Length: 236
Image 1: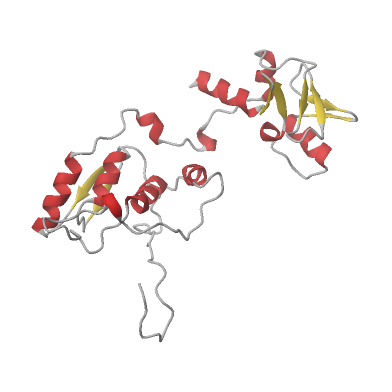
Image 2 (image 1 turned 180 degrees about the vertical axis):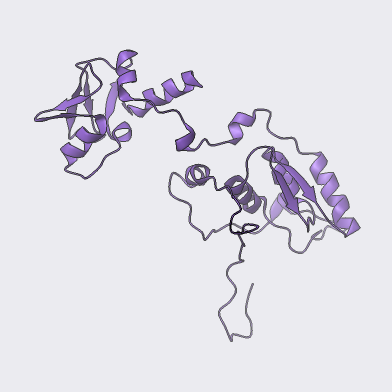
């Protein structure tokens, strides 16, 4: 909001308090979901989200704003996706026109909303009745990497998705390595796992071989992680 008196910095943010009930309480933070939502970059704590405007803004019978501080759905989307799971219960003790409940329903969460203003409560009820959760709950979750089954590279080889003798390269085609029958790689003067060989050819301390190594597939260069995801899907 503008600061017309000019005696301090103008307000440029609102603060979200993220707290636990007590020091021993467990909390959820969906790190992978937030990173994926942010184009595979770790989500920062400062967010830039536009104000609630346009068709999303509820109006009263006179065509004016139905609520002076209606929150944008994008804000609640990110908050709920970051800290809850499908089926969790979300409490909003100041529901207003129902933004929290609306986004909770979209993401297949349950909610409890409290609102003492009858006009706001009526708008919230009308808004919430028109929202149905996504029919496939599996599309609403981002599995944490530690929860996914471990897939050794050797499984890719023994399943024939990659064959012994096949050549792998990095995305810029600067380095190459050959697949061995035991699930290791050979590169000129070095033999080891996909991670060890990737680190060796780059002279780096570590390397994620699944993302570093690529293979030609239908005239396209694709990361070998594609095969790991295929095996994980079959296990699931």
